[in-house]
Image (cartoon, rainbow, N blue to C red; front, side, top):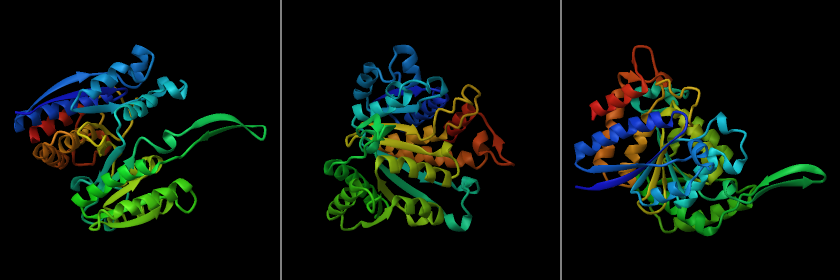
Length: 356
């Protein structure tokens, strides 16, 4: 019997509610497939600021590093919006990615059949299914580059620097090519090479890496064209690889094509087994404590954890199938349609457990 240790970072807003439901499903899957899970909790984000004065305590990093995997809810909220950038909740999120070396972010954008009508894109454009995997570089680029404030020609100014090394690009490209090999063997690299020097290096490096993957069809798109093509013809994409800032934007666009940001999971990987798994939505403080949050993105993040960190593929498949089954009849308010059963956050967790 396998034994796993998982650190829970429940975070802020609806974070604790959705993580609690995901843990219920995780425990059910563990019982069903014959392994055990031990949990440890740690602070990240606004709750960490309130308790310790910093968004990422050293204790949190230490706990995560000795875990098999990490499950995160969400961080942030208006309570901390006026703090300096370096001590806001989001700084904790960037910090944990850097501390754990989580350079590869996997964001699948999948339309579950029962939710097809929730997509703002016409049926004839989506077709029978949509299944896109966006591979986003997570620890480089403009979010981690040099930044500052000063004056330009006597006027107050601010700057953030986009910078990538060949090594950083190579390692994220290899993750993307490896994913493409397991899927449809088609990879789209997204950049802005007609304008940015960093993107020219990005494109050149991806082309070099592609020589090691002759079975994968590689094509390139400028980021503005990719944004347009995602809504014009999403079926053309299988795996997309891109930089930190472009991936942040494009994956949110893809989430709405899928019908609801409340449905999409993500994995942040280090190249080893350790990964951090989280829904891509925010902390939604306006609905925190009301019991109406959608826990499915967090539950689906657990499925990704089973697949990419814990090597429990059967459990991952079972969770995804259970979610699809429940969606045929039951919905939280954000994805509710007439004729369905409207359920709470806790009820949705119970229903997925029953479907398992």
